Each structure stands twice: as C-alpha cells, then as structure tokens.
View 1: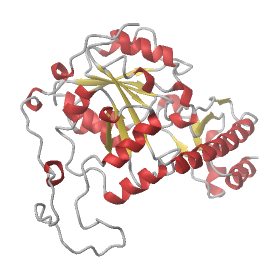
View 2 (view 1 turned 60 degrees about the vertical axis):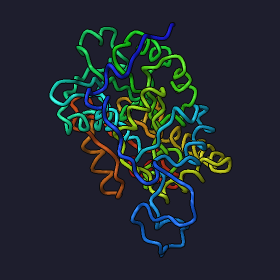
View 3 (view 1 turned 90 degrees about the vertical axis):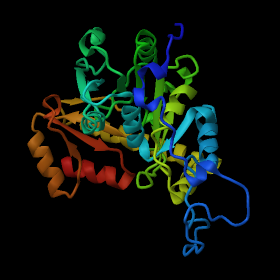
View 4 (view 1 turned 180 degrees about the vertical axis):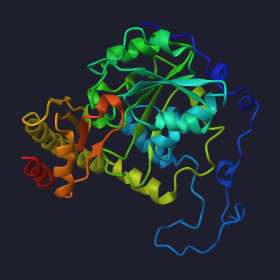
Length: 346
C-alpha cells in the first residue's frame, strides 16, 4: 500500500495556522546561573530537586526514553497528561466547533465522544460487527470526519482489529487523521500500528503508562505522529503538561530495569487473565478472547453475578450500552485476587 497524500494544515482549525504559541519561560530557555525569568520561588521546600521550578514542556529525558522504548523517533513524540489529554489536543487542533465531526466504532472507550462533545464537535458512531471488527461499509456511514478513532485492543470488549485491516483503513482514508489508541498494546505488542507511522502521515498512535507500566496515578501518555501533526498540536498544548515528579517516575519506568519489570508483570497478568477467562467460560454465556489486561464476559443471569460480586466486596465494571447490558468487564489481578473472584462466583 502506498502512503496517501496528506496535508495536516488543510485539516487544522484555520485560526491555528497564524497562532504563535505561548512562549513559556522554559520554551524560551536561556543560559545562566541565576534564573529570574519565570516568577518562581528560589526556595525548594521539597526533597525533589527542582520542584520549585517550572518543568520543561516536553522533558527531553522522558521523550528520549520513550523513543528508545517505542522505536519511534523523538521528533515524532509528544508527552501529555495521559492519553486522554492527547485525545482532547487532537480535537482542539483539528476540529472546528459546531462544524466538524469525529468517527468512532462502538462499543468503545467513552472519552472520545465526551471529549468531542465538550468542544461542540459531533460524533458519528458506527457499530462494530458481531465479532467486534470494522464493518465493510463504514466509510459510507461517517460522512467526512476530521478524526477517526480506533481503540486497539478495544476497551471494553478486549477484541483486536488486525493490523492489516488498520493499515487498509489508514491508506484508504487520506482526508482524515486515523487515531489508533493503543492503551493496552503491551499485552499484544505484535499488533501495534506504530511501525506504520513512517509510511502514513495521517496516522496517529496514542500510548499510555497507566496500564502495563502501573502508573495510572501519574497520568502520563504519549502521542506518536508525523512532525507536521506534532507541530500543530504543540500550538495548543498547555505550557507545562507534565509535572516534574511525573516525568521522573515515567523516565524511571522506561529504563531497562523498568521495562523488564513491566514485561514480567504483563506475563503474570496474562497468566492470571487466562485462568480467570477459563473459569468464566464455565459460568458465562460468552467470553470474549482478551487482548488487554481485562476480559469481558456475558451472562444469562447478569444481575445475580453482580450481586455475588458486591457481596464479596469485588468491584467490576458493568455497562449501560444496549450491546453490553448482559456483560461485565473483569480487570486482570494478582493470583490471590483472581482466586477470590473465582471463589465468589463458583
């Protein structure tokens, strides 16, 4: 497949093309021993060195660490407050309120639609097939969206869309930005679309350290995209999106030791997930093969299952979506917690 002809400036909000980004003290930079250009306190009241100073907008050490991990060039990476902020940044950069739209494939992660709605951007939702794949005629159903979001692996179903199908989508839709949300990709790394970035300038890949890297409370995510898209997004990003403690924790997590720890924990979680899925097959009407760190199961007696979980003090996730009204999502847990879930439902 050949790369599409793509000009992100033609998709961007027109007022951004002449916008000069806010020049924070850190973006301006400088050299010297006495820093009095940002109205900061000279007193550091923390054990963390530098906490009295504003952080870099894009901490270079963190960007370089994620570049080494992801095998994506540093110039093609933006770090943000979780992948959620990256979703909003894309909508703010490319969608004109009251005029443009995004496309999503449901059931899927709810923040795509919510983020669009908060900016008065419409959402066209196309139903995934019965086995949670992209329908053949979805292009005819969405009109002309600026952004097309594909969650892969998909939350909450845990299903996966084959990388060849994603590439075909990106190649056949050059007039939009296709955003592949890979929040759970560490659990099936062979399915990542990141290797397609150099070939398709209209592709964006979202990542996070919240899942496999166990840093949900830190809120650190990444947008992987062409330099042209990155340049436009950097016009609307907040001056200091990643706090210093977050950058340090994230950089440590992306060290060789941190990556090894993550990979070991992913193996443990996959083992526990397999055990849980095997048990759920004995009591559920359907169990969707998991590709993330969770498994979705359907039950003929879903209310009884919910009651058993509540009585055992186990908090799982149920849904109001009509297609998932009989389903419960179970996040993978450690061995003791997995056995407690099995005992509660046996």
